[in-house]
Image 1 (cartoon, rainbow, N blue to C red):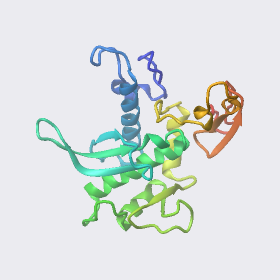
Image 2 (image 1 turned 60 degrees about the vertical axis):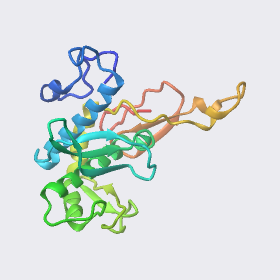
Image 3 (image 1 turned 60 degrees about the horizontal axis):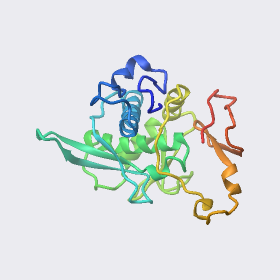
Length: 241
């Protein structure tokens, strides 16, 4: 979605999500970076809520937080209160990783945190605030993410700090492919500085001529000159920088 044209939709499920897109009628302005950012994350939350959780997850307040570089995202129950006394959970994503990881992995972090939303509202029994329990882990597996302390096969599946990996051919991967084939994107991320950004004036910055292109559906990346157009042969999706 480009912020200069609020009428553009970056995925092909227009009819279902058109009412969520920022337009000129929203606060009298077109889609600003802020409106674009939070519309995209809300759309992703709604999409996966319907596809993987049967639409049962409640709405929460989605925020961006890059203070903790060790956390890709986190969930906090009952964190926000409206002026009318309505209480909502908080789900935060770390924009530091949006460009450092591919889009599929970034969206898997969102769904990881959505499993915490599910655990809090529908899982039986109580669990410590940041603990990844067996009930949470079972839900992760059902929707196509494998809990793993190391992020690889064989890692511990419960614990205080936990990551995951995508189960090939699982519900999450299939749902994510449907979303990405429609050219859904996360437009804004924390800037990635290269070593050459700190070089003194007049220094040759050859590294700037090498760009990384990644397929959002698979962990495939290539390096090449700027302005290359690379397409995934299997999914017919454009590689992204």
